[in-house]
Every structure is written in C-alpha cells, then in structure tokens.
Image (tube, rainbow, N blue to C red):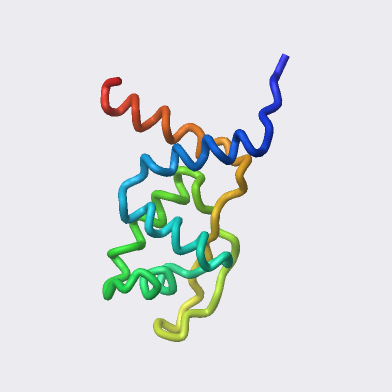
Length: 110
C-alpha cells in the first residue's frame, strides 16, 4: 500500500534537501523564489550581479537535471538574437528533488 505524503511535509523536506546544494545553486533558487516568474539564464546572471554566462549556466543545467528547476518555455534574447530557455522552480511534488538528499549523503560515504 502506497502512502500519500501531505503537501506541507513534502515542501518542508524539499527545503531541507535544497540546503544541501552548493551556494551558487542556492542563490539561483533564491532568485527564482524572489522573482516568482520564469527567467532566462541571462536574467538570472544579471539578478546575481555576475558578468559571465558561464557563472550560472552550468549550475542552472544541473538544477534542471536534479529536478529542482524545469524549463518552462522559450524567450527571444535581444543580446544574442537567439531564442533561449526559460527556467522556473519545479513543482513541490517533483520526486527527483527528494532524491537529492540521498544522492548527496551517499556521495560522501555516510
């Protein structure tokens, strides 16, 4: 029999798992929580006061892989003249976020 987890419990657990992220990834999540809207990689870079896209792009990609962020669409970037991705926080019930804590503790041999 599969147990259902209350949404508040899940949200609380997710917050604890996110604290295990590297500082730069935590800053990215923090900006998206503050803005409450999907952002491009460049917009995240500007909000964090970085000058180089490579300062945020690998971290954003990793957060998408972990299921912390989701790509929600595309937007035209006037700086590059290209269509770029928009990212936002994954829904609270995204199971891959919960696996983060297990992955991090297993990687440290605990």
